[in-house]
Image (cartoon, rainbow, N blue to C red; front, side):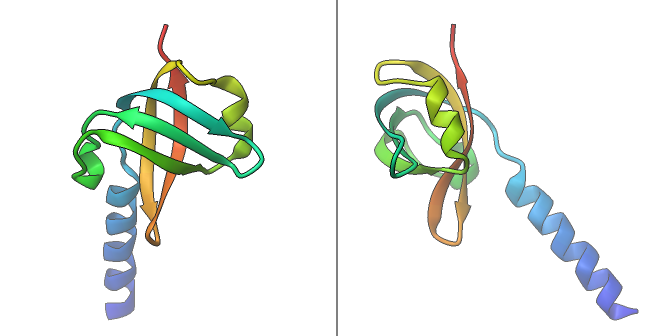
Length: 93
């Protein structure tokens, strides 16, 4: 049964990798056609990344309909095979 234990460990790693915290940011640019969003953000703790402004891919282009340049947001991002992908965006009131 070693394969079962290995699979459970892989699932635990995957779950840990998917557990992302929300990061504060400000939308700088939205490119709906390309499915990309530029965000000026604070430290992204789950990726051990300091604050900066960068372009992210949107996991779902539809989430870009909810935001525009200048919006304050909280967002979650994962490293998906070397691509930084926004999995959630919540406008901040």
